[in-house]
Length: 357
Image (cartoon, rainbow, N blue to C red; front, side, top):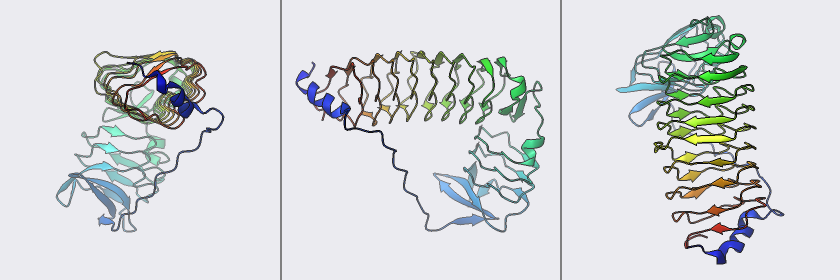
């Protein structure tokens, strides 16, 4: 049942076009550990039942062999910026390590030899940037793809125009691998499980993308500023979309999720911000949160149906959606946040549950 008696008050609170301004979100507070654990020149933390390498000390060896275990627990991850600028010439990463995070070895200028394990599943953006190893690494697959352990690290921008077919067997596309390539289309094989941070960022000629079955993760800013991209479709396996994944995709008009997509819970911060041609979107029934600014400035958006299990909406989530004319808030949501519908000029009615505040 519509509770129209609350409509005017809610619209005033949510829109407040004259008094509400877009403010920068506060930075998260720094977290300081009381004690730093060290082992053979490395600092580390325990994350659940695994070890994450977080940094290094002055006694780090030049020829670094990362241990497979510390304190009887497996080493599973090299953390973001962990070895940035480390004075090493080689690194051997043991079996069991699954993830090398963004910038993990960036600016290790003398690093010329890298041994990666078969267990590696994900390599972050710029993980080996500004190293001798990356500078001298050939495009060893088809003369245009740099591949290690079935992870596509980088692509030769000069050879990646027109339609690009990523080879079968690639398991992960590393962060910024195709950044600013001038491709018009890309074929992603079903062996791929994830796309890293900014994987296709700034591919301004890219028109359409179909994400194949098997992909579960699309990293932060993966397709941001793909300004000509008109359509994107998601498979049933998708469970994570990163912040700003489609930020500034000016011509993106059609976003389609598989009817079998039941694992995606969050549309995050800035996900579709300034997709000014986006008219409608069918959210999976598993989505229960829309983050801050997720659809900010989607000025053509007229229709979006929130799933029944929907619970929370971030600040400015639909700010400046000038064409949005109707909104139904599901029963599990109890608060409309600050300025969620600011400058939604056509929005004249919101249908809300009895518990809304």
